[in-house]
Length: 241
Image 1 (cartoon, rainbow, N blue to C red):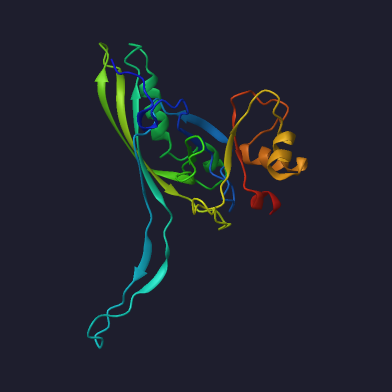
Image 2: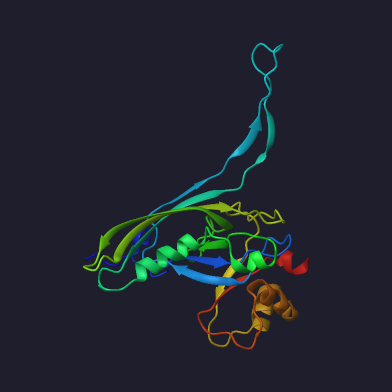
């Protein structure tokens, strides 16, 4: 039986999450309403990040040593993360199967985006506590799942998934001096006593900005916020836009 641990996080109880959102409508770079929240059973033991810069070289017959390359621009970041799932301590559970299907759904066009005539797969936000180095809005470009253990009825109870994320850059290229990341939208988990107005005041110094939070998260009834609900808080630049 696999022993529950936190992988590379030692004894930390903070779990990594992948918030799955509807894609935005129009030209917004803010994720739409929350579709689901994928919680990691085990924190990743490593995260593989990469970034590239595009250069183009046009061969010229008259140049002996080769033409001078031309810088075309930077490419968005990408990240590969391994997800380990295990429910071997609960034989008969289909939790592993459901979580793998949720990851696969990140590569499927959402019904809402089809209805809006802007077909798109979901947008996601990876978060692991206050770890902001790898936190960015992204789309899932690939999910590979390997089932490695089954119960007596053939239901998978252990799996390892490789998930590839590709950054969706924000419109505002404000830099975080510590991480070099684009101006970040934070994720907040609702606790008792929270309201959209109090969050707006705390984040932006303007209680009326609650409407931007509601719109970002597809909230129709701001008076009903259940503790534990995850909200995406748009960047201050987006609220003022």
